[in-house]
Each structure stands twice: as structure tokens, then as C-alpha cells.
Image (cartoon, rainbow, N blue to C red; front, top):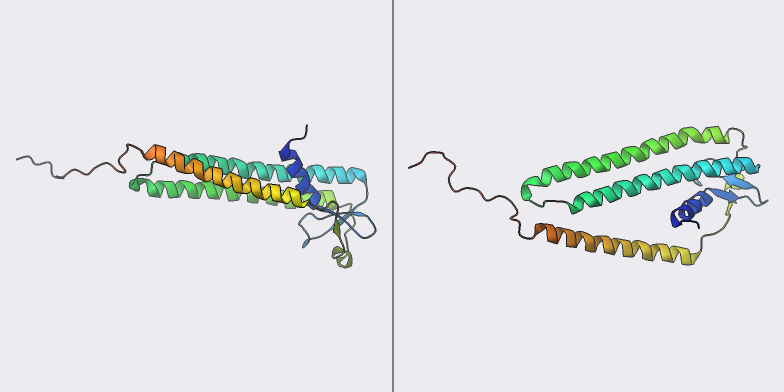
Length: 186
């Protein structure tokens, strides 16, 4: 049984491989704007595919882990007005850690790609415009992905509303201030 995550990562990897008009396989490490390399041997193709899949999987897992922990943290908000600076600071920390981890992963990918492509011949600029996808994505799959994304956002929104309503019931927003601030008694 192939898991949906594995299939999604395979589709991401397939997007980085295309064919030239003569049928040769071409690897695009940075998309269509960057360099492109002919992959002539099956062993090179398998190594590159495994590397790209590992990179894509790590990026997706980091994103999901940060998003889920961020949403779990949002669900635990104590919405008192005196805590907003703490909440902004923690959310900024989540964002910084997320961006830093993705940047580190991208820089590692960029440094490792030359090790895989050093023995491959580079595609000329005249052929880059003639590359075609190996297997075009189906319209049904795109529609299913969009519907799933929309349903997930709606469910997440409903969940956040329910959690915030339950956590704020019966709690005053802030502690009440006392009427007198001086310790002098009459």
C-alpha cells in the first residue's frame, strides 16, 4: 500500500524531471529558470530521485510540524488583553524557527546538488524551452487537492472557533482592578 504522502512526494519529484524532444530525461534542480542536466543512466536517475524525494519530504514534514504546533498553541490561548505581547512574541518565534529551518534545508540542497550533477552534461538554452513533462498532472487530482485544501481550512477554522469559545467561557478577560491602590487604612 502506497501512502498518500509518498504519492504526493513522488509527484513533486516528477515535476523536477522532464523530457527533451528526442526523449532524453532532463533533471531541473531549481525549476525551469535554473540549470538543467541530461540524466542518461538509470542509476543516476534513481540517486537523484531519492535525494530530491528526501529533500521534499523533509521540507513538507518541517512545514506540517511547525503548522500543527502553531495551531495547537493558538488553541491554548488565554485571550486576556494583558498577554498579547507574549502571544505576538511566541508567534514570531514560531515563524522565525520555521523560516530558519526551511532556509537551512534549502542551502543544504543547493550545496548537495553539484555532487549529483557533476558527471551529467548540461542542457543548452535552446533545448530548455522545448522540454515537456513526463506525465502531465490530471485535472481530477488538482480538483481533489483544491477541495481537500478548502475542507481542511474550513474544519480548522471551525475547530479554532470552538476551542476559543470553550476556553473563554466563565473566565473574566483580565483580573479586576482594586478600587484603592494605597495601603493606608482609615
